[in-house]
Image (tube, rainbow, N blue to C red):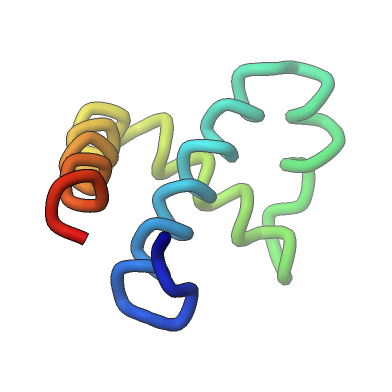
Length: 74
């Protein structure tokens, strides 16, 4: 179990947000509902979805590495 206030927890949370928003970008109904705003607080989710779709290979490798880190080291 990771602590939400540690650097590891914040990194895992950020990766989960990026992966979730990239998935929601692929589903048309969710894209219209969640990712229609490009500015303001909800714009963070739009920007995370763009990062997740454009950098999908590095993000997936970092997810695998963080999973191994949490599984074996933490």
